[in-house]
Length: 251
Ligand SMILES: O=C[C@H](O)COP(=O)(O)O
Image 1 (cartoon, protein in one colour):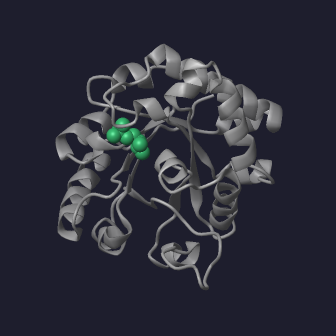
Image 2: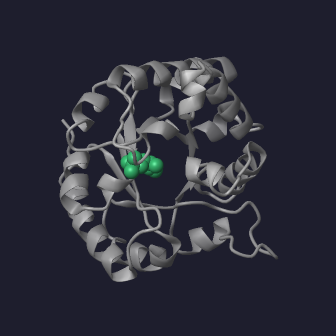
């Protein structure tokens, strides 16, 4: 089954509005030259409106880095799904390991965010991944299974059509230590098998599973050649036009 590649850049807490618009415009040009793949950027909240306007006529997809589960109310510091759709945004990252680890987001909270997104026409990118200690104690698959089952609790097969998963081993994020292509493929195949068990083969076969963690121009081609790697979620290397353009144009 062929799945359309998705190359996503998570800008995290970087860039001014002007810098974000400049980078987005340059990447829209790169994306235009690679029409056989989806290209997505996730700017910080402060730059979302300006970036959406700047790339409105391009194929570039724009995501928020998180999303609340309620549409309005007393939730200081949160951004609601309808505030995002109001800007024309159709995507949201949910459950990034930095949200889980630094800000203490639980699987239950992440599941609520997933439903908040799904209920308001946003495509969630659900992030999962094990820590170094969990990998070294051979708990990788147990941890991932729990994160996926809890994150996707009450998500239907129909809703799975709009969800993307991103496997990001915590030990590979921002460390320069990428998982080998074999390690990444092994986990992606496990995730696809789990989706088959949770839903059905057609759902597993059509779900895009991204890899994230120190993806760079020099490892993108090997990663994208793996059977179950359908794209990448890039942090550091997504902040420069040259490096992210090379990643977008993987061979
Ligand atoms: O969301 C992106 C990931 O956290 C990967 O970040 P990185 O490419 O800087 O390792």
